[in-house]
Image (cartoon, rainbow, N blue to C red; front, side):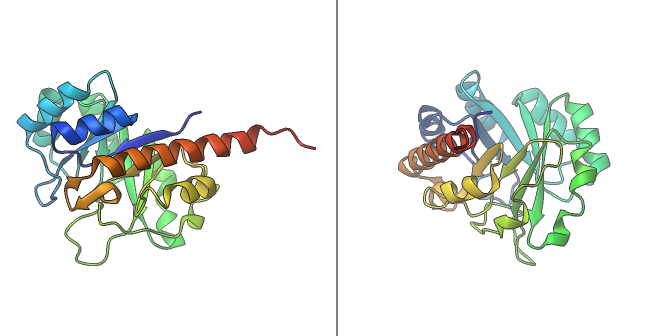
Length: 226
């Protein structure tokens, strides 16, 4: 299976176009007012129309209520929802049923004990995203440019695809792919000039580096034994 590459936190047509032209498989739109990457429903609808049919559209929410989920589903029509808050497994299942779309559940990781909920979330989510655990009191649950110890999730098979995030950038994504072998990688701050300001050159470099690393990993797996 070819690695999926997701560029998250896109806010403008030019930077979205840069991600699409670079070959991103998934593009993320953030619906969280405290984030510098937050987009309004109207702006998101326009961005989604630009991306539709060219990449999968992911709506990222943080502990959103039913009305917000339903409004996004109706007005933006994303292909997937990404739940990046403190949602419990029952809430993940509810959102999946309510919006009728696949759901990615983000799990913050810092130490091995943070993997304890993996099994319960794997039963209700379509994909799990492993992200760096934010520092206590952090304003954002993700997109902070923090990395975590990837050896904690290397070789982990929860029964659903794994997306790797947290501190990835064009210089670090290849090593992370080689170690974890995820189904997908996700980047936001790692392709920015400043919080919320995406850099098209970094987007292109990230996608290229991820593709090259995936091709190299697949070549190693397919190489016949001596």
